[in-house]
Length: 398
Image (cartoon, rainbow, N blue to C red; front, side):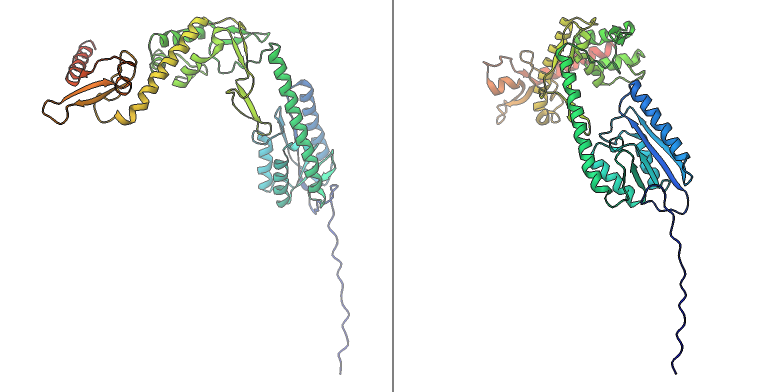
C-alpha cells in the first residue's frame, strides 16, 4: 500500500540588508575609509584638501551602517603615479590586511590619472572584496558595469594629465626664454636665498668653495681635496663629516659659482613616472650670465674646466694601456712622458743576443714615431736608481 506524501516544510531565509552603495552587502557595519588628495601646495588647494577631509569624516560618521576605518590623505602630491603617495600605499596595505570594506573617493582623478595604476589597484581591491566608490562619476567598482566606465573615464583623466604636463612645460620654457630663474638651492654649498628668492652668498661656505677651486688648480686630486677637508673637520652642505670625490666634482663644474645659471639641465622623459634624465642636447638649454654675485671669477672657473679636460685626456691615455701594462712590472702605468703626457712602455732591445738592453719608451713615440713625440728612451736601471733616490729623500723628509 502506497505511503501518504509528507507535506514539505518551507523555511524562509531572510535577505541580507544592503548599504547605501549598491553592491556592498552586509549584516554588520562596514569598515569605511576615504582617500583625499590635492596636487599642489597652493592656499586654494590646501583649503580643498581640508574640505575633503572634513567632508568624508562627517559623511562616514553620519551613516549608522558604517564605522570609520581611517581617512587617508596625501597633500601636494601628483596623481600621475602612486610611487610617492605614502598614505595611498598605506591604504592599499590596510585593505590587504582586511581592515577595509569600502573606500570613498571624490573622483577618478583623485585616485589616479594613470589608467594602468587605476585598474591594477581597483582589480586587486575587488578581489579582496573591497569596493571603491567614486562620487563624482557615481561608479561603484563592485558593480558589473563599473570597470567598463572606469576604463573609459580614467583614460580621459590620463589625457588631461598629459595636457597639464605639456602646458606646464610650455610655461616653464617661456620663462627660460624671458630670463625667469628656476633655481633649486637645496644641497647647494655657498649660497642661500633671500626673502625675494634671490641667491645671496653664504660667506663661511663660500670660503670652502674657493678653497676647493684653488687647491684643484694647485694640482690636488679630488681625493686629496676631500681628505684635506675631512682632516680639517669641515662639514658638508648637509652637515655630514664625509666628503666624496663626486661632491668635489659637482662643485668644480657648477656654473652658479661664477654667477651664471644654466637652465634645463635635466628633462622629463615620461609624464606618468616623472622620470628625469640629464639633458645632453635633447632639449634647448638657456644660460643666464651675471644672474647673481659670483663666488669665484669666470676666469678661475674656466681654468678649472681646462685643467679637468687636461687630466681627463691624460687619464684616458693611461687607462687605454693600463690593462696591458699595469701588473707585469713595478713601474707599469707609473711613468709618463714629459713631452706629450702618454704612458711609458717597457721594451727590450736586442732581445736575442747577450747585449740586450731593457728601456722605457713613450707610447706615442713607439706607435707614431719621432714626428709625434721626440722623447728619448730611458734605461730601466736609470729609472730604478731615480726611484730609489726619490724614495730615500721622501723618507728622510718625512
